[in-house]
Length: 132
Image (cartoon, rainbow, N blue to C red; front, side, top):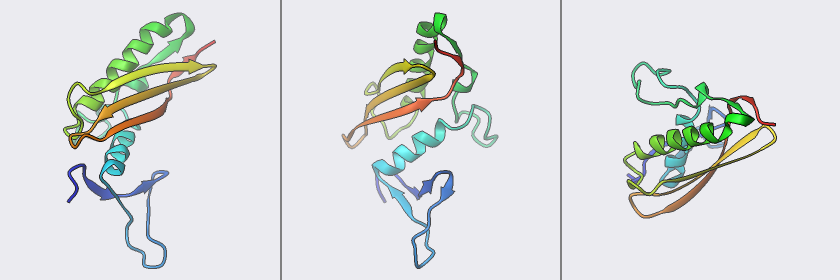
């Protein structure tokens, strides 16, 4: 068992199978952790009744260019909160920066795992509204 986890590998929302034998592919270690983080960012809070604390509030953001600095702070806080509640990520190791161009918001998340792996994730954030 890997300290960062083992799980069925998901590619584009579908379970991945090994060609030829039909077995499930697995995500292990840092790949498992990243898969779990990306999954967490795909649905809002309360979407899973068995785990109401899972998910995110990024779906509630409505961004306009004159409020972007406020929304940027909110996005950073929400992403930091999501990362810090994962026990596989060292506390106080998460750093989030937000940038945008045209209608795209990009989050760069840097963190350290409990087994001292430093990881950088670049994640597009889908929000309502327009940045012009």
